[in-house]
Length: 125
Image (tube, rainbow, N blue to C red; front, side, top):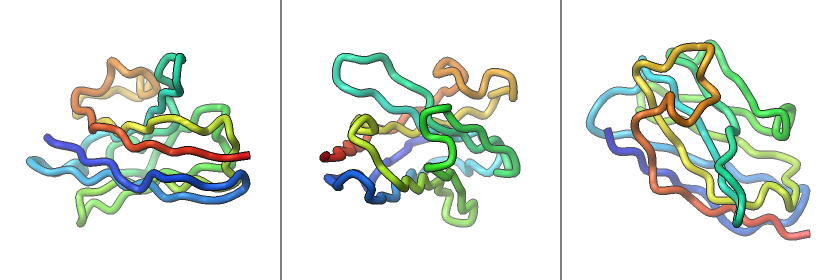
């Protein structure tokens, strides 16, 4: 499975961006697909995940209520709608997919087998 993340850019605080993750090579409708981010000098952080069919979603505490993960299985894609962006949201955002991910570990990097290349989000104050 190859994952291509896109949609990053420069936005002012309070603004919105929509990230896309398009998969190729295998349908991801039965996969858990997550978004993680890594800010300069920091460890990679869990952002959100859409578990399997999309009926179950989880969010990191720092983005809860502002970000929404969704998927379009017909397009083999997962999206991350980011609203009310803050400067601390600045990071490289990665999408990841796992076909054996279990619910209890959906927030952990090690639960995902396939990773995209990342897209940079910069939020100015």
